[in-house]
Image (cartoon, rainbow, N blue to C red; front, top):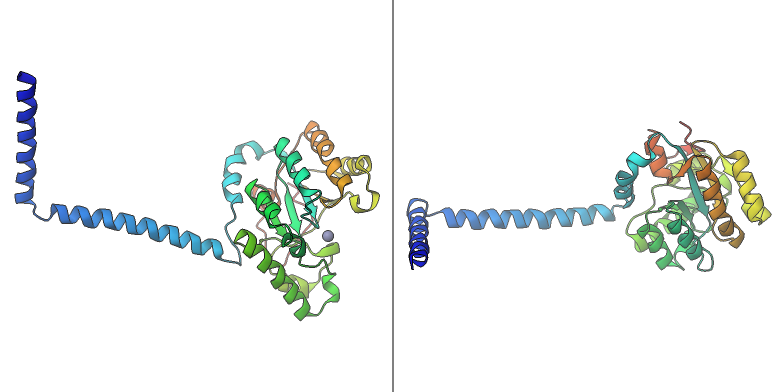
Amino acid sequence: MSTSAKSSSENHKSSNLFQRLNIRFPWLKLYLVIFIGTVATLDLLDLTISKITNLDQSFPRTPMAKHVKATDRVLEGKMLVALTFDDGPSPSTTPALLDILSKKNTLATFFMLGSMAENSPDIVRRIEREGHEIANHTMYHQNLVWLSPEEIQSDVNASRAVFSSIIKHAPTLTRPPYGNYNDVVSSIANTPLILWSVDTLDWQNRNPETILNITLSQVHDGAIILLHDIHPTSVEAVPNIIDALRERGYEFTTISELARIRKIKLSAGEGYYNFRP
Ligand SMILES: [Zn+2]
C-alpha cells in the first residue's frame, strides 16, 4: 500500500517536472529532435564518404590497414620476410596455398595477373578477405620495356579495371613481369615497383626441396622472396619454407606492412628489391 502510494507520488512528481520543463523550455523537444536528426545524418554522410573513398582508384585505403594495427606489436623488432606469389590466381593451385597460409597463420603478397584474376574473382576476394595483400603483375604478363607507351598504358588500365571491379579498389603496388622496367614503365605504372631479393627459380626447377634450399641459402632480414602460386611444386614447398624460416627466427608479413615497419615510404615509380633494416 505504502509502496504503491510512493511510486504513484514519484510518477506524479516526475510528470510535474516534465510539465515544468515544458513550460520553462518549450523548445526542448524540438532541440532534441534536431540533435538526434543531425547525429543520424552525419553517420549516414560518413558511411557514404567512406564508400566513395573506397572506390578511389589511385591510392586506396586497403583492408590491410586493419590487420597491420593488430600485428604491430608482434612484428616490430623481429627478423621479417615477405613471401610473394606471382602469375596467379589459379583455381587448381591457389586455394590449396591459401589453406596452407591460413593453417600456418602466415600472410603473403599476391602479384596477380589481371587476365587470371578475372577468371577467378572468388579466389581474389578470398585472398583479400584472409588479409593477404593483392598487387598488380599487369594484365597479360608482357615484357613492358618492349611495349610502346600507349600499349603499357592500355595494359595498366586493363588490369586496374579488373581489380577495381572485383575488390573495389586498384592495387597500390606493381611487379613488372620479368622484373623489367625503365623510366617509361615507371612513370606509367605510377605505383611503387616491387622486385625481389630471393629468387627461388621455382618456375624452372619445379622441385620443392630445391626451392627450400635456395630460399634458405639466400634469405636475409627484409627479404622479398619470389615464388609462383601457379606451380603445384611451389605450393608444396611453402609449408617447409614457413617452418624452416620460423625456426631461424623469421616472421612473415606483406610488402606494404614490411615497408611500413621498416619506415620506408614507398614512392610511385621507384623500384624496391628488399626492405633490409
Ligand atoms: Zn610473372
